Length: 235
Length: 299
Image (cartoon, rainbow over all chains, first blue to last red; front, side, top):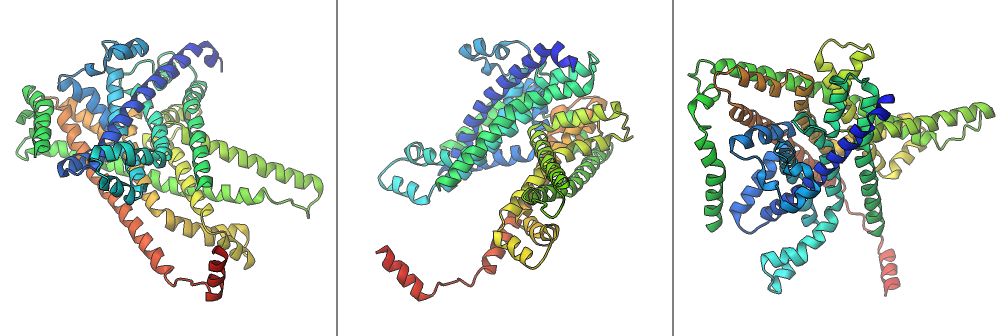
């Protein structure tokens, strides 16, 4: 157990980097997923096809392949994910701005993959809104965008919050894969390094890494259970 | 019409053009995969087939063992719940206290087990199973078993929770009727609750199969020779390395298989929903007197 005390800074740093990765990817996935959900219910057929294709592809493809494409495909497209070097954000999340692109690739892979699941969660929320709501909104002359913004999405959001929570928990767990795709210093990467490079005993390191992930997933899970129960009582 | 043009133009400029400029559409890169006349075509596909067979074997073993252990876990947790209510009044006091303490302890342990392995990333579980078991002196010989154990630890917990919530969601009358017939709690679970939970939860179980199939790809981390690792070897062995092409082909096959499975899950769900509806068809109309009474009460 000494390793947990001796290398506490490694575990803490790994947790912090994983947290940054999860936060940024969650924002990206929520944005992408909402856009995809809106596309899937839009009145223009090609938009619906693109949305459906996106969801089908990324829900059925292993995350590992998505990561492979982000890490090998994006450089082939001539991109280093530089569009993520957003001026204000790089000062807070210093890893966004560095020249080694793997943090940005990890964000892209996680956002794109999770976005498909977010889309399905939001769509299930939209389906829970009674059809009369949207029809009434159309009848008083709101456009499609206004209809979504003021009537459908605010109500869909409430029904979607529990499935969205489980999607985000799954994403936090999936972020562990980034450590195996070049993201140095992330929680799982630090664990692997401590055991294989520094020869630390495996079980204590495993416990340290586990605690790091459980700190993020278990409270979120309990929060979702709580929201779900309160929802059930309210109905 | 405008959107079609916009989407087409976007795809052309952002994806096709850069790929074409780098020569990613050339026959040197695609040939080994799509041209049967290519000298390595059959070799590449033989290796890919081996990889997919290895993937499916691991996935099949993992799903079967997760089902077995997950069912066990669900039954255990249901039994413990009813056991915790028992007072063991017929037994002498110290023994009763010890039994109650034991069942209480088992409840906590099983709960912790579920929370921990549900909250851990599968990658971490697989990686540490593969590196910790040999260190503890457990040598299983084939890497396949470490992958199966890692996948099982996660999926048995998920399946166990699916089944448990299925059993707890059943109408209380089912259990009460079974107990009134004189079935023991274990018999009630085995013959009454579990079969119904399986039926209701079948779509969720099939969806879990998709998850297992996708997670099998994590085997490349512990160098299990599944399809992604094989693809890596193919890419390195070819004179013209073509990662994008090989991973695209593998991805398409994965998507096709998983898409078929999720369609199957949807179909089962529809079938089951229809079955339930017809089974409960005879609508129970309350006697007219009661409805009349209720209406007057409302007024």
